[in-house]
Length: 492
Image (cartoon, rainbow, N blue to C red; front, side, top):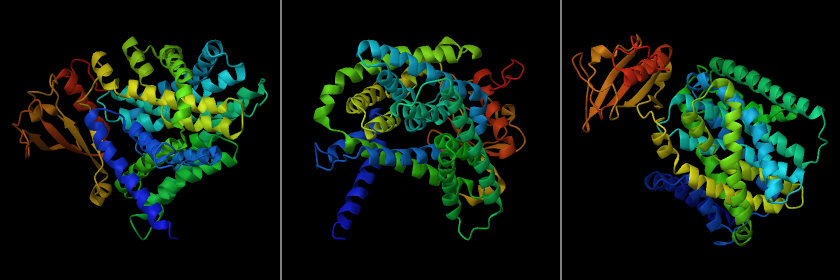
């Protein structure tokens, strides 16, 4: 008991430092996930001497954090945003994962001299993009919605097939014709479990009369965790069940939805911080020096060969323009998930598993630095930025839940066709209204004769039924002006 104040104080200090790291990362353009890793390393063997040496415990805690991250990702994902890119995201999370495992495995078998099973295991560990990295990085960039939607669906779904592949290869399961059937079963069963529990949870929460508002967010998150447990008990993909249940619950008409989303975001940040600090504690800096070369080789293979080829093949049916393919290839962010997956063979005592963990750690740091700091600039060079995209902001107000309304915040960037448009020409749908304009630091209520200008920030109030139409109208006018409909611009 005497150590309890020290543990609580140290934990609170780490959490506060991590929160401040988010602010620092936005100023210097460095992904905050790396700062959490650094904080963990400083607390570990190289600094304060706190070291985590049990790979099984690290893997279990990592999976628990991943469940919460997927829960937050699903609850905060707008179905209307990802629906147009659903097929693309599914192709990226299945076909691209399989191709990435094969290409990476073949290349590392040749370059690093690994035996085939270990080479494919490296490929499986590195095949999954990281949901924490994608959700925290891409949502802060002004990227076109369809691209963000495809990448969000991919990052939410591809953990499941990558996890299955790692477990199969690490356990030395027999590779025969039944393996594809097993993978298909686990994915379809996980999808069914998640959909069933998501629908059941939404139905129950709408009819529950809980005595306190704060119980609704707890019940929603708990339902997503139950989906993971049920999926695992059914020998299905618990990770897929978690994300699907969260996606359904996040887009259902739940009581106090804004409170639930805010709570889920807080839990997601806590899980991300805890996960990366945890992995930093597990790292041994002096051992990482010997993993620099294999880590850089594996990173180059993934970034320059496996990811581009897997994106190219998986997106062929959708005729994706080459600029978008380049962005999708570069935006395959790696984060904590590959490190967590690498703990599986280490916990099973596989030879060379320690080398895999160290190489993946190096790879994640390098790729996060290279990709995370250049994504925004690459989008601008490729002409894919869409900084005027309407962004939904969550407001802790029960009245909005009762009115089934949402707020949209829009910034008019230089070159936008919204510049010079009169309020009467905006023609938002019934149920949506431009309620406030902030111009040169001063806010005012617009009149019918108000003319929009570059640099304006707009606050639009819309009912749920009018929300998607209002977003499409704003995007259409942004691209083609007030006569967007006549010019064939739908705003999709």
